[in-house]
Amino acid sequence: MTLVNLEIILSFLVLVFWLGPFLISLKSGRFNSLHPQFITPFWISYFVLNTMIQTWFSWMGGTTFGILRTTDYEMSINRDYLIMPLIIVILSAPFFHFGVRLFTNSIIRSSHEYQIFNNVPNVTTKKNKLVLSIFLIIASATVWVPNYIIPNADFGTFWTFPLAMTIVIIPLMLFKIKPILGFISLILVFIGATIMKSKASYVFPILPFLFYYLFTHFKVKQFRRWLSLILVLIIIATAFGLGGFKTDARRLLHRDYAFESFAALVNKSENKFFGNFEYFFTGKVNSEINSWTISEFEKAIPSIIHPNKKYNFNPSHKVTQIYLPQDHKALPNAYFNRFFLFSGYYDLGFLGAFLNAFLFGAFYGFIWKKVKIKVFKRNLLWPLFLYMPIPAIASYFIAVGGISYGLINAFIPIIIVYFILFLSKFKIINSFPKRQIRNNEY
Image 1 (cartoon, helix red, strand yellow):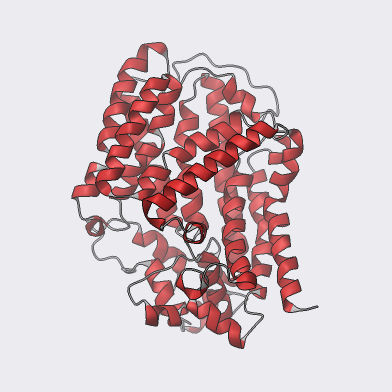
Image 2: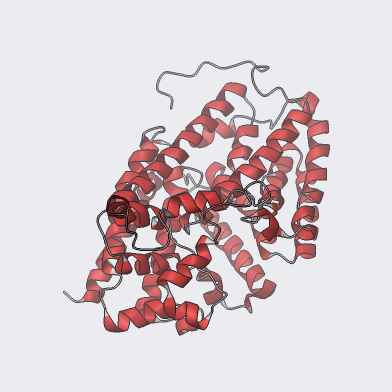
């Protein structure tokens, strides 16, 4: 068997192990785009396939905006460079799915979940709609301002950008209250994106509409639904091209080099079984960083709160310096993402990669379960919109290895909108009649 054939087989197994439950669930005719067993596996598969397709076909233009220089060089002298990273990704998938299943139903048995949300007509109570709508309109027009006027670096991990990303929740939330309000909100959001010159600010507010439509209305067996979806994706791709990608789809499809960075870590690690943890016993470390996971989370603390933090570096930049020497030499100011399993594998080897996958699966599964129960009990949709930043923003950033930054980009918008709900005198805890939940419903 040639190495290319082995790579093809392993890449196929990545899809089977990570996206298998989702693909099986399509037999029900529903597209559960909000379930944890879709949102993270989709991005994991996406980043792996980006690397592998470029390895086989070189269709993205070489190292200019395709495969990394370090990967290109290492594969010229070590053709099995990507084999072990692929195996680790495959073996980690069951741990992720087990973590999800620990708290919520498998996506295979969740085809009914869209009914929970379709049967709930209101975001909030009628008496609070007006005040809530006013607050949300004001927020959609102003949350981007701090990101525009305040130097982000002074606050660590770009805390003001997640504040601006509150616009991810607001337009769809207002659209469900009254469609005209949703359109007004989108216009305000796009004005803010124009001022900030941020393509992300154009795209992220559209993603919740896409996820929500797929979840509540998309029918797998209807051709016209697929046609509509394809047209929407073409429009988004075209907008990206006109917005600064020079209409080159290759740049759009290969934006992060997460799996290549992970491959560099796997191949350069001195200990492939227990990672850096072994060196706690010997008093030596195989890198200047004792724990990548701890450094990720400490970096997330704003400098204004923790100016003397021990791990005062950008994890994305550091991975370039340590593991991507060819790229760092050519682009000393550049940085590349790490991939979902990077920090766990760095700290604990194979065990860390499996633990990393399991913990995030359990985390997402727990939140998804709570959202469903809260919507069903309160007979209001607001908990679903508080969940939206996770599939729309956090799952992407976490999949490329930005653990703390992915969480920040979800929790800051959630906190802001939750506070708006509170200000509008929305009685969140126990003011609404509760339904009885059937045993084992969730």
